[in-house]
Length: 106
Image (tube, rainbow, N blue to C red; front, side):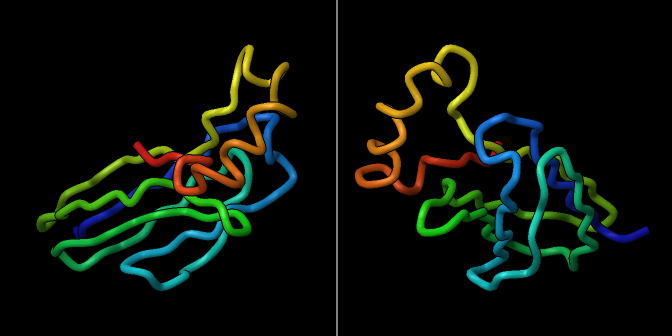
């Protein structure tokens, strides 16, 4: 058995028609669609993971994966619930001032 990272993108109204680009150690690997889960087989070691959509992105998620370990992470957009109703006012804040928090990984 090898080391596995599972990255699940939540199903959300915000950005539901657009794909996120997935980066490992600064290199783009593929895109993840709304409500999709991608599994990566990784060599044990240290990694940095983040996702982007246009010029906005997520936090940098640093992790170490060991032999035969499975790590499950989730990515999405924090604009959910009541924030959708004020989205036209919140969106410019993330787009212009807080670009690395428009998306999240946890």
